[in-house]
Length: 309
Image (cartoon, rainbow, N blue to C red):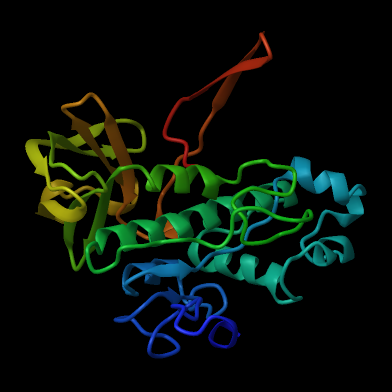
């Protein structure tokens, strides 16, 4: 049509545009090996492209949203007629969220917990992807997840539900898209910490690496002054995992990394050294304090130990 009505006009057929259906080297790529292809979420760390223009992972809306279209307690089951009808994909999709949860996390004990955990799973999946893509700069110079919002109340790949409520993915993506990203990654017993910058000038600051047990005990700490090159990903710290953790049980600790920029900005990230289902998370007591303020409420939460998600 472009050739017919505007001969000589440049037109690039997309999306995606590449020399083959799943090209890692040329153009952009839609990658659905995770979710549709049922590969584990951590495989995002090994898949490459010049520009990931579509990928994603499903979750349910939160319970307060679900109650607006599933009004009866008998409907509060992921395979109920109402819940299956309010699903963006086919009949396979609700059970697939459960399949991923059982494979990579632990099965929640009730419907409300299931909805919440599905969002943590989705947020983690997209966070893993976005960090992997940015770590791979300048080979990969684009990451665009599917999808932002919904046109009706459903379980879907969206990061905000139909009613505008943010899912965990929206919070995680907002942080993963910041101009500077701190991204730890472990492989074959070695931990690398990449600092990725979208700034067009070099940055300077301090990298602070802490190994912390879930009760708050600090196992180890390493600090170093670093330079962050402009517009690329740089591995600024490497260590043997067992040396860094001083022999601690890997399922009982996390790595907490902070980059403090000389301009006053601070960027941080948390990293677990084992799969989520193997993390030995403690039982947590959370207390809340809610005070009415102008135009809303001030909410303060306190936990007696580390509270995941």
